[in-house]
Image 1 (cartoon, rainbow, N blue to C red):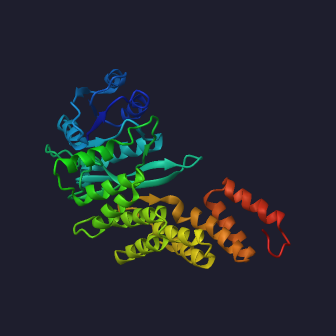
Image 2: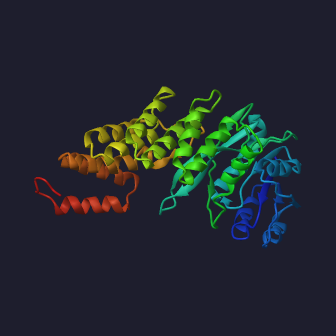
Length: 363
């Protein structure tokens, strides 16, 4: 059986750390916790579960902290979790099964789904694959001061073992942008990936014109990862939308088709632009195209689960109702119910159709 060292970096995580470590102890052979300056009970909680707790002076560099944590690992494989991550019991059992066969796979990197947002029923609505378990090479593997990553290499395998991310505390929302701007002040040249995330941070801070400039430059760069480019076009469209430039919004989304087949997320974004313009026929076309789009689960990109079923259906219900095609509108509402049986919008639409039955032009 393969042995796994869980390596974590933490700071002021007393709210969630015990929850994480309580599940991790069921599959980790060693738990390394690196504290970057906690002033609460984080280290005390860590000491109850961890094999070793280390201090590391914070330098605005997440990769440096994670590489330090990995350097303390003794086992053949390293795994990482954040303090607000957890694995359900079913996923913990899958981890134990993985350990039984991990050596046989000869894997260098194990990719696992990272579920980061959820609906009211606890179903993941936004997820993507991350490099979760890697062979312990004894060398630094993490890159990036912020939005740090291990670039997948060698023999890469995919496992359907879901790690859930549940934030419980407010974070410094300016931190990532501050780090990127510090890098630029130091004269650093941002890598394509860093430029992409810098553009996203500008968008989150509603600095839309600056975000457009950064993201437009990013999508022209050679060596940029296609999934980042596709997401950048969607982010560009959001920026142009906020700037009131809806033709440029559409242009950004259509340009993404030069890279690959349409993703459902992009089709839904185009549908939304036409929907907001009350161009029901065009909106319906793109929402129906979204329903036919292939979900690239192993592509590594961000996946918005609702775009592959529920969202296009509930929007198509409205589109066809506005076009006077009531029967088709009702059918799409019922299709949306197959994805979310207890959804409030579905219930509202059912009542609407019942209340307006027999009307030629229901309002």
